[in-house]
Amino acid sequence: MTVTVTTEEARTALVALRTEIGKAVVGNDSAVTSLILALLCKGHVLLEGVPGVAKTLLVRAMARALDLSTTRVQFTPDLMPGDLTGSLVFDSHNAAFSFREGPVFTNLLLADEINRTPPKTQSALLEAMEERQVSADGRTRPLPSPFIVVATQNPVEYEGTYPLPEAQLDRFLLKVTMPVPGRDHEIDVLTRHAAGFDPRDLSALTPVAGAAHLDAGAAAVRALTVAPDVIAYVVDVCRATRQSPAVRLGVSPRGATALLAVARAWAWLSGRDYVTPDDVKALARPALRHRLELRPEAELEGVTADGVLDGVLGAVPVPR
Image (cartoon, rainbow, N blue to C red; front, side, top):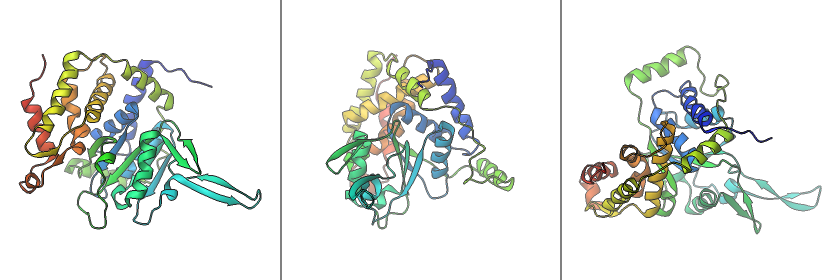
């Protein structure tokens, strides 16, 4: 039975989703909003943060509040593509091989420490991310809908890791950093734990939205009006990154479309039917920071991708 959801019902439910997840995740409102935007845009998210800042809890809480399936895969150097996508298994009862689905067949896939697995396994995940399908045994098998990958990586420990190739980084819609919470938020976390909160038990969270709300929201986002001067502003921002002396590889046209997509989603979630330059500026960092490759000499001087983007946003004229 198909559930019909109006645009306003979808927006109300997704705004309530942020509040519901806040019952489990404290002090990371921007990360929560970023995941909602990614779901509306059907894009993937790269989460970066030190261990213990609730990256896994965020994904599990999101799945619970959306009533979606989720799977966590710990990426290790010995993880093979078949461990992720599935493999053929001999069925002794039928004397034939059958395909056993891997953990990638889910709605929200948490790829924990994605940069710890070899390139062969990363390429298998890349097909799932880009094509929403798995190729095995000469057949393609579609993945469930919605399907997004939330991959995590540790920003301070690189021993035994495989840097993600540019082609794969470019497939992530957003790169979100999760910092250590501030003092007040950390006190709130400990107070909740002292009162009996168990991060492994999310039964207190109630599903407040679902796949139908995401589909209705995504359709509304695609119908959002974007003025020609705002489109030109997105292009100018992305082109300016390619001209920065600190950058070896700037933002590609795919990055420009990603920035426009999340700006539209943010405008719709904020209750507007049009996109402003401020929407573009608000989402520029998470949408573009992982698409910049800095020159080695610039990195040695302490230049960061966020610093380059701040300079670009300050220099590119804003349409009025």
